[in-house]
Length: 233
Image (cartoon, rainbow, N blue to C red; front, side, top):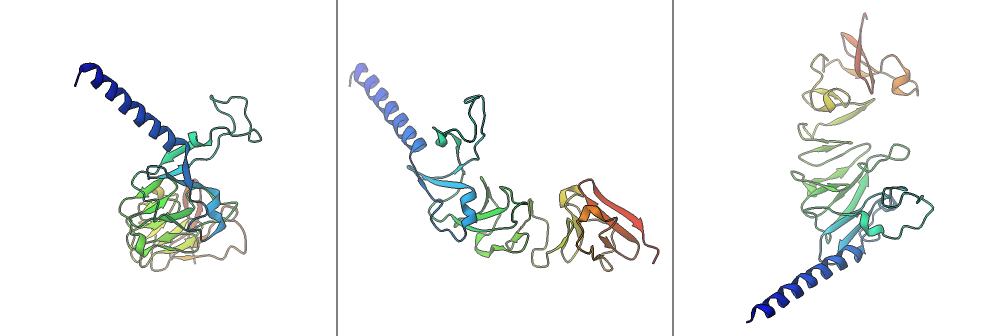
């Protein structure tokens, strides 16, 4: 084989590869109507690539450096440019399971998906998850390894996990708050045996001085953290 023919074969191989990748970029099979258990799946679009792989179409930015004068009312000529591969996910077994929150509290981390191998949240597979035991409950989801409540909590006893409200949650061993060390460390100053939530009479968590108590303290909870006041009772 001559050098000229080798160069030609290499060029054709590269051209074929580029063509296939280009087709995979622009031509994908929508999965939004497949395996749908709820219309809320439509809030995020997923696709199967021509060559396989699961892709997520990220939310549109109505103005960007590429289209500085576009608005949300303008046509979106190249929506596939927002597609990102969800690495490691299987599009053939991909399914929407449920949502852990409702509008106006919904965000992209609220919808829980799975395939045959992993729990999937937005564009991320959870490597140490167990999709076979996954349950979506009121305000959170869990499998036998993790709890999913805005973040992935790997340190909890999922069989005894309880969402208490006002950012507090517990398992058999400890009490936690999402605004205290991101919910990853227990509130060691709380007496777990006497801890209880207080009736707020319909008021928001941040509009009352305290939302919980134990035998020693009253506790408030907001985005700044957990506050405590002596319990004189």
